[in-house]
Amino acid sequence: MQKFKTVVFFLGLILFFSCEDRLDVTPEDSVEIETVFDTRGSINGAVVGIYSKNQSGDLNGNPQLISDFMTDNVNFVGSFPSLQEIDQYETLATNATLDNIWADAYELIGAANNIIVNLPDVDLVDLTDADKAQFIGEAKFLRALTYFQLVNLFAQPFQFNGGTNLGVPLALIPYSPEIPLSEFQLERSTVNEVHALIEQDLLDAIAGLPEDNGERAEAGSARALLARLYLYREDWNNAANFADQVISSGEYELVPNFDFYDDNPQSPENIFSVINTPTDGPQDEDVPGSDEVYVNFYNPAPGGRGDAPFSQDLIDTFAAEPGDRRFDELSQAATDAGGNDTFFTTKYPDIVNNASDGMVLRMADMYLMRAEANLRGGTAIGDTPLNDVNIVRARAGLAPLGAVDLDAILLERRKEFCFEGLRRMDLLRNNLNLRPGGGPESAPGADKVIFPIVDDELVNNPNITQNPGNF
Image (cartoon, rainbow, N blue to C red; front, side):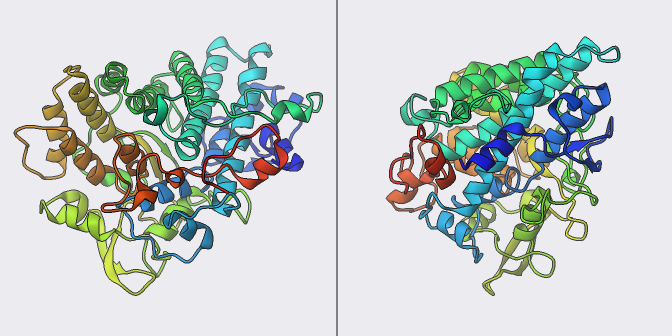
């Protein structure tokens, strides 16, 4: 990293907020580290500031977009060179989109570290132990979510070499001028080491977070993300158990329709989402918010760019079983940026206000994760794989299956979560090519199914190691 960027990433104190309860609040000016911990309100504001960083389109928006158009879900017809590189499996370390993802991720991690490391020693009259546990739990959840995204993008999955392959650097301390810069020039930890931190952060978050925390992360959010981590690691028993805990908690439910896509963060379908409101905007004029990425790329003109329509393969997949509400109700026929008649998703409908929310964790995923984990683990924790798949199919208006296998589960995952960024990892972790009939460049384990460590990090961190085949 450049020295200036390193200071910014790890300081993590650029934006703070004064509201006690809401996330859509007005940023205050930068504050000194000691000021953050002066009052309960300023501490809460610092935590809300981490959520604000998570609204960046480079953390929620672009990663989901590129994860879908690298696969068989999206026919990317856009003109941005950095996105074209990714679409064509020609990504370079100088790619601007990846540089922004890396930078924003470590800025959020730095802000989370500030809370995690410094808050335990704070003693205020109006700050209870429960307050501390919640704030630290929120910071740990958001740090875990960000590291999970980073390791999924910049490292081969657990299946590649049992997790002993290189992951990403683990930054665990906040910036301080007393700490030498060399302390932040870190080697890459292994995928197993990154996963171990994510696991511990989420276990800690479960212990510290309330079951109901409004629009913010809560214990169920951490359980759901932990279930996904265990699924990706093929820890079938834990994956099924934690997904089952979310399902049986009574805090959430698989709702009967798809209204939760229409700017409805309070829907019981949503376990954790990136909430965008009409008053939210990019943190700076060069960094779009997550709502802008989703709305601009996934909607046709006028209003959107028309860059990311359905792939023909995805259209054909839905056509193979007519009557699927996930296509009939969540797509629109339109012309893409290349002048082709096609279909676009309507999962991000608020073009006027740029206020569509980004899906991160929701109930359908809990059922399909539990189904896959039980199937592959030979168990029936909570329910059978067949029943779990059929409850998701029933909402989609489809007839129940009489039997289920892994291919059937992955097919339901594809149709349920298209345009939500899960397809790439579902394919890679199951040793499947990212594109049907794709060449060796899109095969599991190929160099450019993952991304290069960004050039800024290579130039300014003598301890970093580049991914094979990426320059």
